[in-house]
Amino acid sequence: METLNRTWAVDNYDYCNEIDHLSYSLDNISSTMCVLLYIFFAFLSVVTVCGNLLIIISVGYFAQLRTPTNSLIVSLAVTDLLIGSLVIPFSMAFSLSSCLRHAGLICQVRDSFDVSLGTCSILNLCCIAVDRYYAVCQPLIYTTKITNRVVLVMILVSWGISGLIGVGITIAGLNHNPCKENCSLQDLLPSTVGPVFSFYLPALIMLCIYFKIFLVAQRQARIIKSNKTSGVTASRGERKATRTLAIVMGVFLICWAPLFVCITVAPFSTDAVPFVVIEALNWVTLTNSMLNPFIYAFFYSWYRTAFRMIISGKIFQGDFSNSKLS
Image: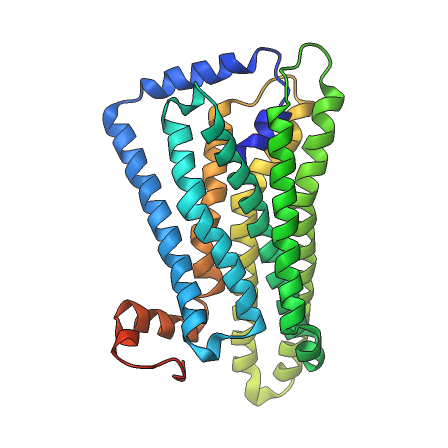
C-alpha cells in the first residue's frame, strides 16, 4: 500500500531526494543480505500462491466444499493468490532494485495491484465475518439470508469497490506534485478518506461482528455449563471460541493496523516518515495473504483432508469429488 503514503505523507523536501537516498542505501547493502532478502521474499510468494491455490482447487474439486461460505473463502484465496503472484514479485523489484530511482510504468502498475488487491483482501475478510455472524448468531435464518446469490453480490461489490479505489489512488498518484507550501488540505483528505474505506470501516465492522459472535458463544457455553455433566465440554468450547476469534482478529490487526496508522498520522507530523519504514510495514501487510489460508481453512478438518489428497496426488488416481471429508 505504499502509494497511499507516497501520495499523502507531508514532506518538506523534494520526494525524489528521498527516493535517491533510499536507492543509494539499498545499492550498498551487502550482496549476501540481498540474496537472503530475495530468498525470503520468493519463499513468501511461493507459500502464498501454493496455500491459496490449495483452497481454490479443494473447493472446485470436492462437492462437499461447494457452499456459500466457501465461495467467500475462494474469493479471498483468489485475491491473496494474485497478491502472491503479482504484488509480491513487483514489490521485490521495487524494494531491492533501481525501480525506486526510475519510478515509471512498472511501479505504477505495481502500486495499482497493491492498493486494489490489498483492499479487496480486507473486504473479503469482512464478508466472511458477516457470513460467520449469521451462521453462529442466527442459525435458523442462515440459509435464507446467505444464499448463493447474496454471496455473489458480496463478492462483486468487494471486487468492484477495490478496483475503483485502486484506479482512483493510481490516478491521484500520477497527478501528484511535490508540495511546495501548504499541503495540509491536499494530504489530509486522502489520508483520512482512503484509509477509512480501505481499512478502518471494514476493521470496525469485523471487530463488532466477532465481538457479537464471542458474546453469543459465551452465552451458549453458559447454558450448556448449567448442566453439570457438560461442564468440561462447555469450558473447552468457550476456550476454543475465544482462541479462534483472538487469532482471526489479532493476526489481521497486527498485519494491517501499523501501516494504516502510520499513513493516517503522517500528515499531522512535521517529520516525514522514513520511506524504508513504509516499505517494511507494507511487507508486513503482504504476509497476511500468506497467513489467511492457515487461519480460514486450516482450522477445518475437511480442508486438511482435501489438502492431503491433493498434495499426495490421490485425486489423480480416480474420481474422489464426492468423497466424504472428515
